[in-house]
Image 1 (tube, rainbow, N blue to C red):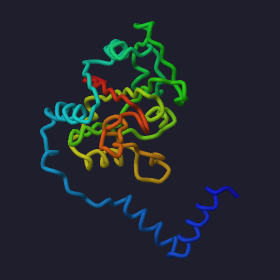
Image 2: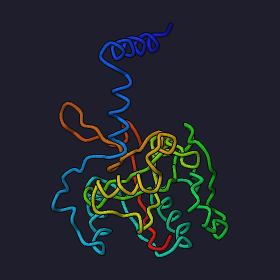
Image 3: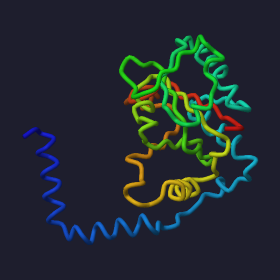
Image 4: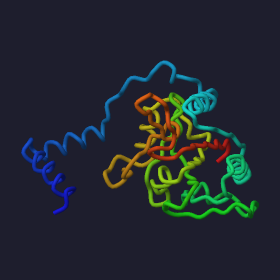
Length: 227
């Protein structure tokens, strides 16, 4: 038995002794079906027409960069322009999200896009966000076969496409949308939902911020008005 298995077995045994599994499962199911309402900060109550600018302001405050294009047809050029500005190769490992399937990637033959799970050699990951939250400039991406979670964390540069229609004011609105679109049945819920605010960062003992220690060094967000 490995050390990992030993630890998990101990945790499982402790939980079995802590109470009735059936009661705990019922409590969890009830919370999923009828989630409690939480407080919404005053700053999050922003008019829909101001949400995109608020999102961009907060995202850039935490070291992300943003761009905005009108249509999906503008996406390849915007992506290529960003990669060139960072002296990065014109090659991305991309999700297979249906939105990206509507893009005419052939219009820019110098840009190479491959889909699938990110690998150690991939320098740029391209994903599509489920939502963008104006309140804190946070991206929400959930795992799915067409959207591997590795794209969000393994490549040093993370590029995220965010449709304008998916920008919300606050966290609660995003959770409600996720429940409404995906349902609350256990089989419908995503395996993981990632909430990403800025590129990976940490502070050393002298409180000096370092980017890219536990994930992407760069986070670039391209907002598409019509997607």
